[in-house]
Length: 270
Length: 287
Image (cartoon, rainbow over all chains, first blue to last red):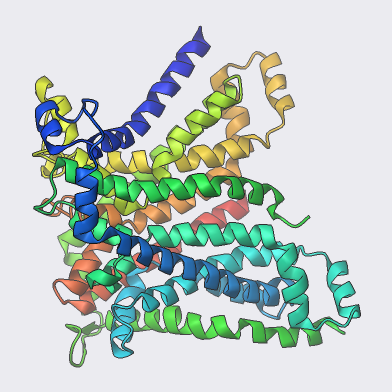
């Protein structure tokens, strides 16, 4: 009996958490007429993509998706690359003073972006990188790889020495050992990192908002954040916009969920 | 090959990051600290004014308000989700079956997958005073309010949105932590006649203390840095009702062109975050 009540209250809470998504989805596929007649809580009379299509063309959403994917994808790859190089020196090379190096990386990841933004903005303007996707890629590559280095150094610190010694005996140099031994064996961990970097960069708002001022360069969160509360936004348009923001995020979650759980369990090199 | 000689050549692998960290983190942070001692509009030469910006901060009511709002957001993003998350994770853990707990967990976690700006867009619509769904629901009951536009409601409303956004993270982390706990501990406690709450308090919480630390630290830092939801939902308003340091520094940098003052706010924010991190890590070490 108590268990029944517990299950029921957990389920009610779950419904409350999901309710905003449901309301957004319901109203994004309503026609304006349907919404005016029936309000936000009715089921749509038919599937109307009017509002979604309207919002999509107005902001050129395809371009925004491309920008987000380009930036997040480049950051994911480059940041993993940097993390591997750093972690190789720290975790396997055990360079002297590595504790301090790690502290620097950790601090780089913890510092609020607010304390970097104006100088970065100033420097970007001076170097002609302001309002380019490249600037955002460079900055997030550094920020994400700072975290990646911290994590990966601990993982590579446990890397089995025998495998490395065997590679060296076979005549592999340091770079070869990294490229053809360490990287392949650490693949599960690296792919988890890459997914995290991709999603984290996709979700970023503050720096992209400041650096990507021209329409052609903006990312999905930036364009949605800027349009929030604008005159052209009414109920169906707002829910269409929200839905377009939700769909890629949920899609990544569903696609990557399996890799993530698999990666986390296999991840640590045993 | 001796270890020290081996270590030397590995420095080369750190070189690319050394250059980049210098250019993107170290030098800009140094410039930010330097700018905080100047009056500067962003163009022309900054004028050195020593500690004036910091003295002004101490007298600026908006600055203190913005940190008070930060404390409220720490409650909403770290304290409440951690407490609720502990209860929920423990409750989900006692449910029978495998499917239901994982479905419920996914439901709690769903808001977490959104970019925080998108979460703001969702709620900006639901809470809109003229066409928002929430007021359509509450209007007939006479409970419709201008949730984000009324200074009395704006901060509590933003807090509620942040609880919704954040809750799934502690639930998932704590459930993962609970897998580690030896079931024999619960059985022993149950044999001793301990109630569910006593088992929760004396077995669950001590066992997943490391997870609680990590969640509290990361959520507190996230709350101190919060920008996206404020920008999207309220822009710090109405008045200063939801002003936070992050948005306050942004205003000074890019709208009021008080770069020196903005830098001082950002520097203080960085110090607070650093102090919180060090304090947490110390506390964790002592455990």
